Length: 625
Image (cartoon, rainbow, N blue to C red):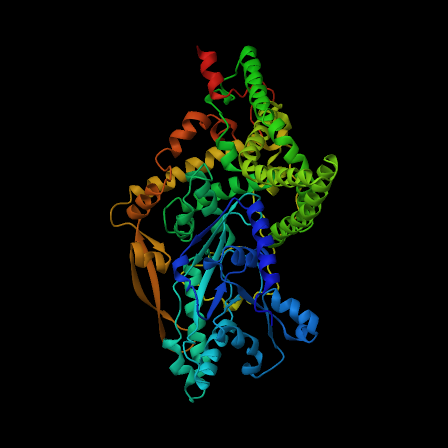
């Protein structure tokens, strides 16, 4: 075995560069829970294919080297075995029924005080919650504990360290990652039962340890009973925190889970069903048009957008001039950003193309973007270096200048891409809104045509997930139709933009009324909560329920006060009080249901509202003056 594991260090460096270039930030929480030395087994969530081990290895505390399981037969060839060991792989003989043989490579790594990283869910998948946690990690930890005790190995106590890897948007370029490590799990509580000669005692100890691992992973991730609940919570979060970077990443998971809990129970408020329907409609329209609420909310859309308030021609021209000015301001950045952008353009084009090939496999999209981007950059950077070096006649001075230039281009591009990327999205969105609002109303999609865009797309179920394995606690399932996955084309802006603006206004009003209903419900109003949040902010009750067998079972149910939940969200920056006010200020008259009658048509003449103009708020004040 390679003691230095040189290849692993090289791969970890490349993975770190890839992660740094794709994501804006990897926020590590609970790093103090990871021992600096000694044997550990890291049990990580697995929802984003190869990016999960990339994030885990490149950002692991104390720069500890992680060893991953690989098929034992691959180690039969000595040369290949050296490559595998050097790159941080250890053999696992899955064909063996003897667990001492199965985990021999794991035992060797742990006995040297190493760290072994596993993904106990067994496969990468996209689901609204953790669906399964298998027993492999628990078996490995307890079998090693037994193996070390039999050999009298001192200072060999292994600890399991749960690691939750949460993506704010796992397939989106320049999104964020939160990696949180839970409290280390000692084997002391389980080894006596595991060592027992009583039939079934060892397996029972393994099951208990697996449940402990799963509980910690659930408490540090976002878990919803179904997709509608998760999408509703996401949409509510995006409306409450319009600037997507305004949420403290340290509290992203707990905020998201609080919102999931609010939309997991139909008894939360009397208007629960209608609120969720409005949120889902707006979420689906954004999904269909490839827009985000953050971008739309950053556009100045005043009351003059109302069909009942036609704007005269001078204001139209002023609107157009202001938009052209903003567009030119955004393009003015390009001369300073153009060369780095041009250099990296093949990675954007190919990354987008390869992601489109797996559009129904969200956990594969980011992987394809990152892998293709990394491979292309490993080609682009050397070629650029040689071209620049040739310009300087292959001199030593030229080599230094070429190397610094290539590094500067890469660093400059990655550091500035966020701001330029957001400005570009805003300019494009502004023109799309302008086209959609100024287009004749008769071009709008009919209700029948619009219906395909008002239901969120559901990812296909993974064939590798055992649905009956999940023991995620206290997530009340919602009755729903079986998910239907269908392919739909992106609609033309001129035909759907009015519907998007209308849906946004209705979603914000609905969400405002939802929180208003919670606030007036009184001090005693309680809402269902995840058990770990209830223990922290509320309380838990033990409820007797009918068991699968004979007799009753005790189920733990968590609750929080509605007033406390609202205060919790406000304290963390939720703009609850300004929801309705924001709509009334800028969006109140934008194609509301009352004004239009129905989304797909109007009882009045089709040409009544064709004089509609979009006037940015700054321009609106100029017109009034």
